[in-house]
View (cartoon, rainbow, N blue to C red):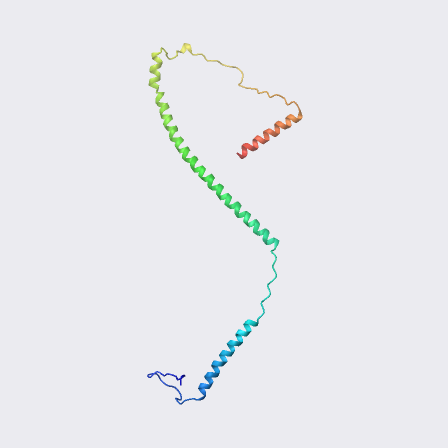
Length: 179
């Protein structure tokens, strides 16, 4: 017998140990039943018709417009970040230049003050014959009227010229405000 079951020697045995003659027939029937089902499955898979393709779905114009607006906003945001970065970089460069110019200003101011030492100026003035003025040399002038100045503007040639001048002034004020 080729289908003889092998039992472990030290394993427990449950139930009847007698030969069951119908067991081989049942096993063959089970094996053949499994083969038949496999053959039927193969036939069924081959015989199936192909599924029909779905019709193409249309994209909603609202969804497409939303995506376009979203992409435009993202690009605008990125360009804003690029511009902010360049402005920040230029501000840092200007701060460094301002610091350098402040240092140079202090150095030049110190050099300027050293060239105009009061003792040196007094000594040079005495050598050239200059002296302090005496009381008889000082005169005070008193103007009786108040200080005033009058500025005259040329009159506009026509109403169109006046309109052009006022428009030009408004434009200049707007440019100065936003600059």
